Amino acid sequence: MKKFLLVDDHVVVRSGIRGLLSEIYKPCEVFEAQDTETATQKLKEGKYDLIIMDIQMPNSDSLGLMEYIHIKYPDARVLIFSMSAENIYAKRFLKAGARGFLSKDSSLDEIKKAINLVLNNRKYVSEALAELLADGSFSDSPDNPFEKLSHREFEIASLLLSGSKVSEISKSLSLQTSTVGTHKARVFEKLGVDSLLELKELANSYKI
Image (cartoon, rainbow, N blue to C red; front, side, top):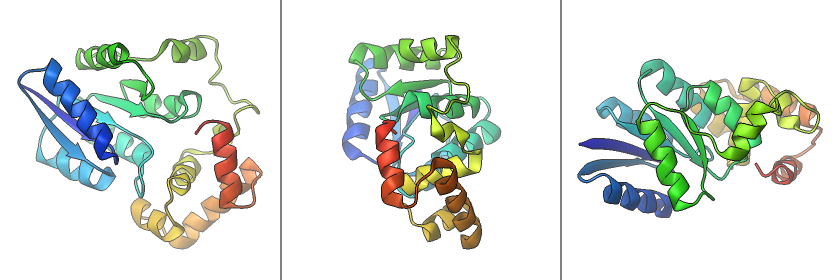
């Protein structure tokens, strides 16, 4: 019997994917988590054939969770399922150990294809993402300012964009509040923004 873990803060998304998995893989068990904290607890409770995970969840360090899974459970198969821009996020999550990056805009057939590939120890990327990988579009470029950010800065920028406050990020990442503040200042400087509103506007312009 297949066991799945869905990590997404939207109940409707989890419900839809649960229904799809239950239809394709009979019988199967589907477990759910709404953030990285509950996901970590679920991971401690059992082993899963596939983890399907969103990356933009409130008060959650999704990239940190991906790295934790890759280190703690190296055989775990993770498929990222997100509305976030492939050209910004895919490289980081694939490097962190994800087996695939799938857009929530994908067709039902594409979702099934991605799930089956990752379940069978293969990797999944969309045709558009494959082209980016092939032509080297993932290299640092002034057209992609978020690529200038370090791993930690990118984590903090993502958490800020998800609505987390500095104090919440400090707790989530086990960092001093002053350290988070310093990273936040560097993020703003590297991206050329002066406020959270400008950061969100910049992120929206790159479909993050």
